[in-house]
Length: 142
Image (cartoon, rainbow, N blue to C red; front, side, top):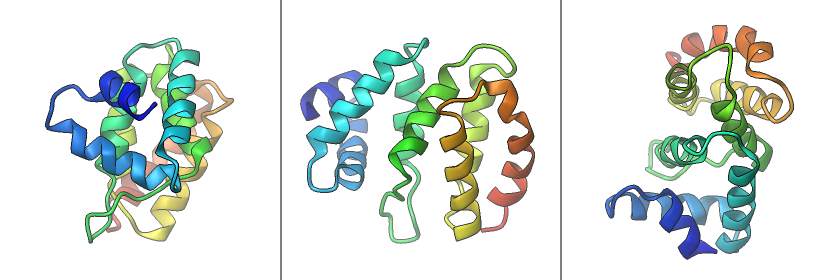
């Protein structure tokens, strides 16, 4: 599964180490299990690029020591789902909001990002617009 994950989401050889760190952080000792779950979330989504964008942004969400900050699996699934939704905001705008959500590792901002993305598992993008209002403010707290 790890190899399939890397083939699907690494857009160039330079992305492979980032994605390997992502798998290590999210795999809890079994990167194949997380890779399989992530690929399944990708298959459920309506947008072929959503999962790739999510991996790029999640792989860059690191703490001051350069370690990938791990969100919940539901938050990761929500990120893919939210990026894949048509409608209220264009995918580029949603990717920008996700980048902003993942720009601060202070506990309040991480908790906000987690709540926002977990809600995106089952809610349409339009229902989440009110949560985006605090994203920029929280991302600037670090």
